[in-house]
Length: 178
Image (tube, rainbow, N blue to C red; front, side, top):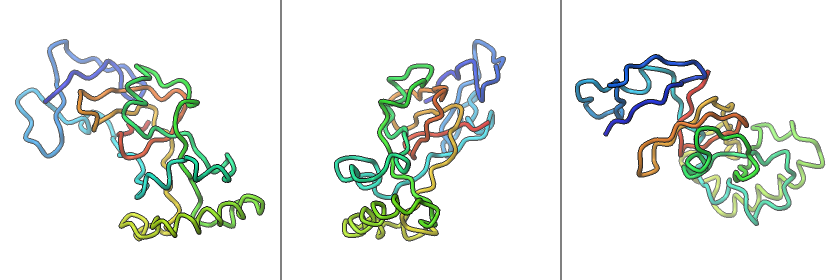
């Protein structure tokens, strides 16, 4: 199923005719007049946590310092509620974002992070396919904020949202980087 692209992509105006083109989903044969979003601009999927219930902040992360908790789009509804522009990250959930080299963290931060990692390992965070294939199983490596984020798993037409607050996003959305 296709949809009409809004009149912006990557912060630049696109001049598209009123009656087309329509976008299609990759892997499906595109009907006549449809194009893939990747033909218009670069697209990247958000970061994969490998274990959302561990890496998305909650009661289990209260001892972690705020500097390792990054406001992140974790649900399509975060974008749908935002409308055309995501201007504030205060309502977004936080994701535990740790460097591969924990020695980069201040000593005071390292103690609480190491305690959290013992808990995370006990709960299987190091066992997922994703974690086993990272340089360091605890380092999600959130990507740089994309200027535009779009939903793709929301059981509805995608929402394209300008990321004015420079929030990160996980793999529930696609980023259209500059």
